[in-house]
Image (tube, rainbow, N blue to C red; front, top):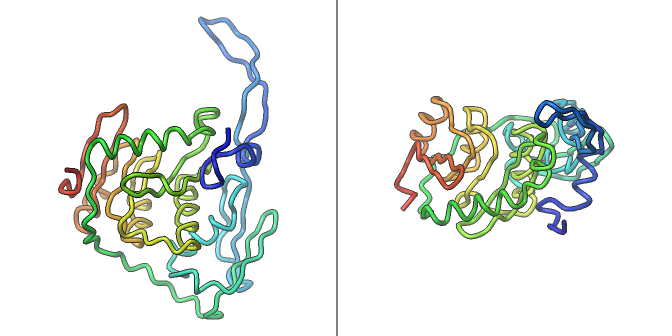
Length: 246
């Protein structure tokens, strides 16, 4: 397993799982097997020494999670807003250039992106996404999220929380100055209104998920010009703004 740090590698794998012996059954016969289980931890996020939130998460890429979370809350707009970060075992402290003015900006962005995908493009992206889902296939205990261009998965992260995995991806995009307004978000979880609120802040035009979205998410996606797609076993369902799937 040699995927880079934007995907799943040996280092990431050992940080978020541990060996565990369980009892399993096969044709009603019990046996002991060795497997992997996922780890969890509490992570407290501070902004300028003010406690903002405590998150239950996987113990990996805490800085990206904290930064993505703060962006989702409208406290950060770009990397230039960040003065410095301090990372400890169970907390991340983010210091902002604007000092203690913690005004939130969570205005959604209407997507007018010209990005389009073919069905073949979408299936190829989901296959690449699945190839990186090593921890999920080993444990079935994490959610995955990735940001992609039409051709490639750019960044991939996993977490026990679906929103955490998404925030890690967006935290990476912010620090790398990646414009998300012409990118695709791929997730392993259902798109609900909370997930969609994170998407609308970044102006992402296409979301591909392995699960069907909720009714509120569909209505909001249609209003804001976002294409919602569920894709599993090469079967695609398009729920909003179908003009981007050509």
